[in-house]
Length: 148
Length: 406
Image 1 (cartoon, rainbow over the protein chains, first blue to last red):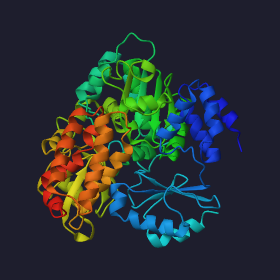
Image 2: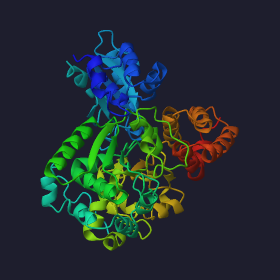
Image 3: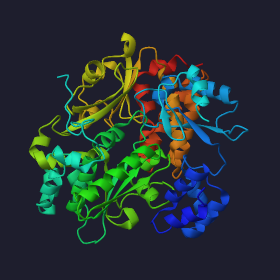
Image 4: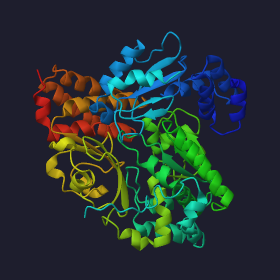
């Protein structure tokens, strides 16, 4: 696992590179640990409050620990009319968690998202940003089983 | 006239979008070559003459936008807006996945016109695979020498709808919270790192190579006179063919749905269609015989916007859908200005109340006042457009609201 110090150092000279650094940190850790936030603030010469402000502005960045697989259910209008609510209920039931929570084994985090731009076959969910289309509630167990 | 007219997507799935040599084989980079043989001023004039208007939603004349950039500063930037966050829209993703090199060529043409050697593509965080594709395409184009001195860097957003607003997008590239700036100054004068910057949409840039190779007059002759060219549309909702199409801009909305779209799913009747994304107006069936161009849509109180076409059949609950949309805006408001932050919150609260059967006539009156304030007083397009789904449905589908009241 790449060290967050190295990741931040590699983005440091890029103007405005703090968001790029956050993306790279999340790729390794699935969230931005507090120490990494503090280091980013130092490296990019902003206050810790500002570094935290940037990290919490964007819905794809998280300062809370998350699971190995981040499942995002799209709830925008085209997915909404295609039955996103039922899929979400199936996800909550299968995982035993509510939106925003992580399973006790640290494997899955369930989040809501707005449109992911894959509206050719709704409803859509993404697992670690990879879209899966045309989901029906009965497909949920199989989809989850594929996440090892 | 039920035909598609493919210009940007003519070679979709026939060429590798990452490969500059594939693109050159089908006539690519000839537009840039021609642009570079011209005087930058004449080039801007040529683009003005083509009548090309922004494809991101605002519909501003592209050449005009470029002409606001002052000549004297040494550093200027070309920024491509690939933050398509309007729900139901994925046309910029399609343009990149089918013809990424045309986007790069278009950016380089703009760079030559305004005297800039540095471009940025701001790609939404939902599309990491497009970021990879673009990075490969840029590498390939640089290697082939096609881009010359012009450099392009890709930056990835992180899930903020407001970053589609050009000054918020600039803030985000700079590594800040994506909060829109006060305008003026406009980015053309003071943009990225306070330097003159042209921000255009993917589709706008991708039109440029064709305007240069085939001529401004050719482009001006396609589709609607005041908004010429083609438009890539994405069809979603209760529609048989939920896919993308490229059509001339004078194409009728009725034909989009019943010819290309194959009609409403399951042979049901149409209740409403929302064009332009989730901030667009709901259009009733009696207005279907309208061309999709910017001004024709404006004339019926709607907008072409991003070109998303969201179809709702006769069984759909309009109030429930608008309630969902109100929640979207409440979530996506950046919170910087009060009319939008408080307005989107209260719109959501009132819509929820009505949708749950607890609303009264007074709530509808309050919605009307609230939305009027938001349109007039919000800082950016988000707060100004957020009320449109509410106001347009109160105009055309008021009965749907009334039957849900206490």
